[in-house]
Image (cartoon, rainbow, N blue to C red; front, top):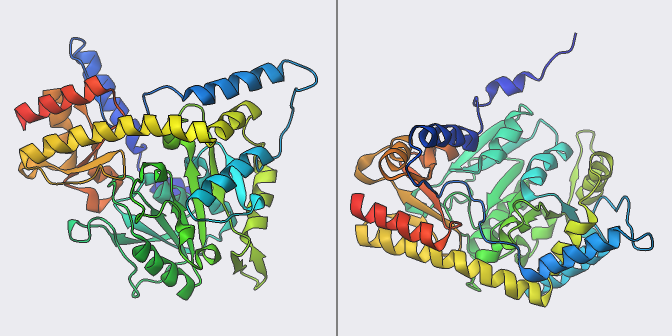
Length: 398
């Protein structure tokens, strides 16, 4: 008899964004005449940068010629992407070896898959509110999860608590869903906490490209000693609009070593390499050529112009909320606006109000954890026209 993993019984019935999609589909079916403006899921809307498209077209042509055709590639990614990323990190003050970089199909996959190299006996620490994948993937393994609370008082940037002992720590900066970003000094505290507890930080830097302030780190490795305690996960989804193209990368420093249950000291880089070569066949060559182009000088320029478009959307959103006197977080170093629900409404209550009265789709903060109740996440990834119209609807009705 096949026995199933009972830990799945402890998951919520549906993933947050699936639940939202069901509600929106029902509304659209019942109101076919209404123009729905979607500001919920953090999906980009502008096309890929021209230099990326050109590189991928060239790669497609190469795949049609015997002399340049490529079959299986290295599971950890081609050297040309590694080298492009080494140069990219160097511009932000971080030195990496190419063998410390692993190319993947996105940060979401790696956030879930990285748990394979950790024992299920580990205690997991996550901030609340939090990206649901961090929690759900560990519930699937039956691990103990403890939370540090993000609140308005700490600007939704929870700090280490010595009364809490954890083995694996999830951090996301700039944060999804709140848009808050840690300073270098704050990250230094987290690194010190991890080293003191012999813990490992899983640092999600998916939104690093939105940072424009030199005082806000774009990588945890700007902190001295971080390579001894942190794995960094990142994605081209927001950096270069690869949400549908799928490419990301994870950095596992050679200096990061921890003991197994039997006392053997293990290098996490070698463990992740072994995991990937066993369970992953690598990202397609065509996609990796596009990624390489995104990190070229021209690619950074073109992708930067796209990011600036989304930043302007966020500015328009913040301006409207300021006019209405509604408190919010994020929007400066992030495409997300984490707004307080007006008139004391709950997260799902406000979600329903926006959908049913204004035909605007947001993401209820309660879906990101207990501390998200009373807040709603809006994204700046929409069209300029849609963003302006949505804000006009809110300005008239809130």
